[in-house]
Image 1 (cartoon, one colour):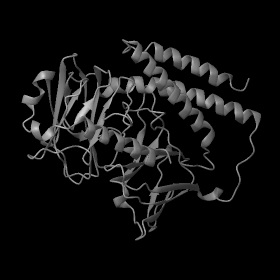
Image 2 (image 1 turned 90 degrees about the horizontal axis):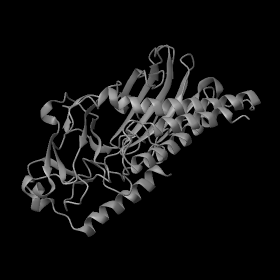
Image 3 (image 1 turned 90 degrees about the vertical axis):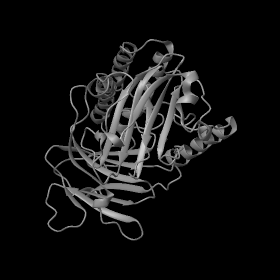
Image 4 (image 1 turned 120 degrees about the vertical axis):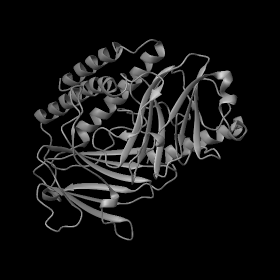
Length: 388
């Protein structure tokens, strides 16, 4: 059958998930199955919705097909490209905090991080007064052409990230065309091509599971538990992005207080991740906070409380039954070098000690009704920006 390569790959990927070394509970396993389902959805979509000759931007990760510690504040768009062709990218700049572009060579695998050939944000683009822009990517030099970026040999992917601070910010538009294929139809499918696509989806699925089980071992797991790194330029070449990472493990009666200065960067975001290296449910729970969502104390600091039980404070980060997990800060569209003073401090405390550890505890309190209103805002904002 034409689908045999995909079916075999799904079985292999399921075995990889079931044998993941971090599984300790049924919840861990069931979340792994949910993660696998999202991977199947994403890789089948990618195999059938992308054409190197007739490219289009697709979302490879989102609320229901997560990977790579996906940022709840970001919409990710990717297109497959060839290094010897020219592409025209047309768009409209929304009102989001950041819009960035990156050209990668190769793919993420469990043995390799792809090279970053080009990385910039929209400050390097000429954008018209009405918010529209046109950029070209191709093998030739710019030769005075505005918004032209030269593709290095080996370039295989163009990735666009649209980053929100206020989740009600207006989404932009983005389109890609290969210059020599505009107006030319896609060739009809053949049996051979159909089988290749199912095989490509299966190969991508197995690679996806292997890659993101390996990735945190490179960048997170060797760090001391319940600590976070000083801000550093994000590995992988993203322009003007600093990050701070760590992993946590808390007992039932413990909480983590995370303290960080409110940054002068246009975007500052924090999120929790499960050991599947994906975001926790950020639609129905407060598992992430950015500079527009977090309550700032009178001294200019943001203090967040990570715990399983509700401590009754505005900046509660819900553990959702995850006594272990990943911690991630991102600062984007930065215009200066970040130092350890810009980064977080973390402290593990007993749950009952939380009020005494928050110097503005009375200021931090929130009623159940007001916290529920915050969740309602999240649900509506995700529906508006991510499901359209």
